[in-house]
Image (cartoon, rainbow, N blue to C red; front, side):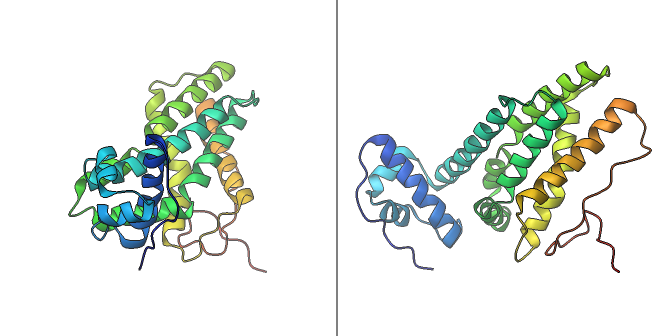
Length: 236
């Protein structure tokens, strides 16, 4: 795939750095990691190769910076969710997980995951870069909200970060896998919100009552789902 040069010039050190990152995303997704060169990224950004190396020491550092920028964007959305006017921790958790699902089923995120999965055998440092994509921060955000829910409902969480990490995996893993493997993944916001609400209700009900009876009804599968992570709609 041919990547054409970006027209126009960028000014200022920060402007050039952002231009390089924008270009790097396009080139990594178009060519993969091994077929991406600093020369091509420089041409796509409309800057010199010297400028690219001035900001990023090598290609791995550039890839890591691309991932970190995506992580920062997700972190900001999560912080905004924490600062929202939603007082009920359950509603806030639903909102937080919806934000996570929107971000991690987005085409660009999925494409970066595929690049990492393709190259990870030969480039284990790329797996380390992807591992940090929004995960530590969302666990902290969820942990803080779980503690608030525990205070309101009179229960204790012995290891809140462990429970928070479990909740994040439980809420996100299925839909992320469907999105990765489906040729046309469903990204309907209403469906993502319904899944987030169902998972949050299920998880908090277990924490609050320690009673697994009377679980909430699972949302129906959408067309395009590869695995039956959610219930099949009834056929008539």
